[in-house]
Amino acid sequence: MTAPSTTAREMDSAAVSGSVQRLVLPGVELYCGDCLEIAPTLQGVDAVISDPPYGMKLDTDNSRFSGGNTASVARRGNGIGTGNGKGIINDDKPFDPSPWLAWEKVVLFGSNHFGARLPVGTKLIWIKRLDDAFGSFLSDAEEAWMKGGHGIYCKRDLSMNAEANTRQHPCQKPVPLMAWCMDKAKVPQGATVLDPYMGSGSTIIAAIRTGRKAIGIEKDPEHFKNAVERIKRELAQGDLFLGQNASAHLPGPL
Image (cartoon, rainbow, N blue to C red; front, side):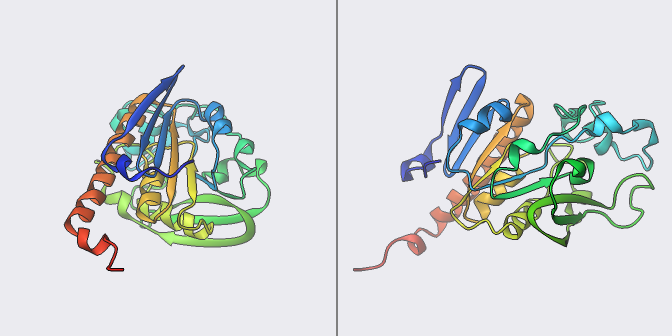
């Protein structure tokens, strides 16, 4: 992935190749299409950080939900709850992590659902809710697998509870959580992070905020559109900050 020129900050470009839409923004490349087809064509990817579809619709009985949490029901494609009432493509089949294991730095959420298909690695635990907040069925935490090591590390972030009815995707992750994953994986600033299952774009925004470049791929056109709008708002906020503090970023006298 080539770093964008300074003029790219003021404009984006979109291209369509077959069924794949490509959008280039400052420090970011976004694709609407099948990640298994697009990823092999990419160059310069340093890390894969993602929350893939891992078969929740396949192995979960919706009727068991308690506490009225419609967000998780929406994930299974029942058309209610958060995330515009949309389910998640390929969430009705087992997830195969093997296409993503070749990279040196990898973090994949939902690893408790496909751990038998993973080598030994580090566990990253997101503590996402207070005890008994939504009833007995929903998890207090989510697990991610990180390539290498064998430790267990936890981060508490309860922000999604307050944002349950406003988030754009049924499985939207907090931006600080995804930034924490990048730090745990020791992804350096300036490196390029790939999220092949981009969803709401939280990983992309985390990369922007932490001085990393990002590539996002999303198969669902509606989720892609929402993620693009969210990422553009993030970049616009950065441009506004730079405009208000331009003198701080100008080179000093020689």
